[in-house]
Image (cartoon, rainbow, N blue to C red; front, side, top):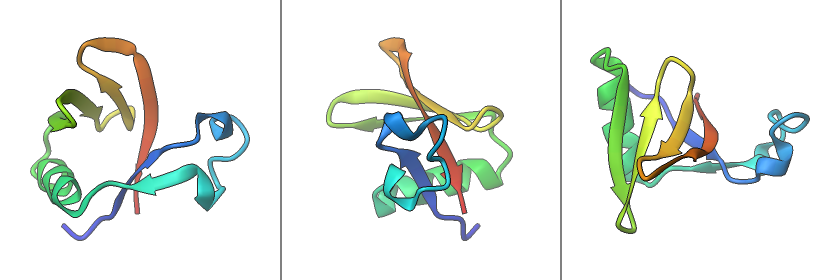
Length: 79
């Protein structure tokens, strides 16, 4: 696929600012490729590591959360 993946880096925008481009940050090119590959293959979720922390992206809810603390979560989007 050719989608570009973002995560909401500014969680203060969660309710009102999801349309604000400043609220979103692109994943690294490597992570973008991994997410896009998993998504296009129909995976339900994808687990990846960043700075020694494992993150899980659930495609059904378009949420990312930490494997070690599922209360730490943030929206993701694909454009």
